[in-house]
Image (cartoon, rainbow, N blue to C red; front, side, top):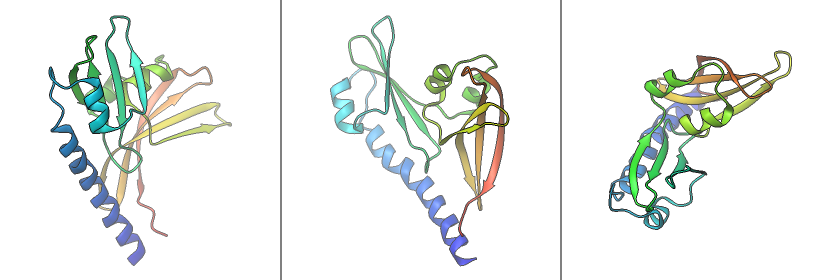
Length: 163
């Protein structure tokens, strides 16, 4: 019981502190001014990088599994910061549609907390933690068929493990 309470408190503190640490770094990023090199110095290397045909670039900075945010940092073709976006939002969850590919979902939501395969259903499930309240974590789930296309989405919650 005490271990579960401690785990819940620690998880909540991490969820509160990690965005705080990010806010110090993010405050240093100035759209229209900060370069890609400066961003890398401040934020570290991105987990994923996408380059578009027009020369623009997006870098991914997930804060999962402990956090409830994933950042996408967009650069214009001249390698200057355009925008910093927190992508784990209800609006983005609503944009996930049947038929989308894994790559499209990854670019929209960033790195998931977990990826699982269920052989009896022949499906993959990715999930992202959306919030932590009391002693529960809440998740947004995306289900893919074996070809890597979205078949449906859903949500679930689970008690914070503590022993």
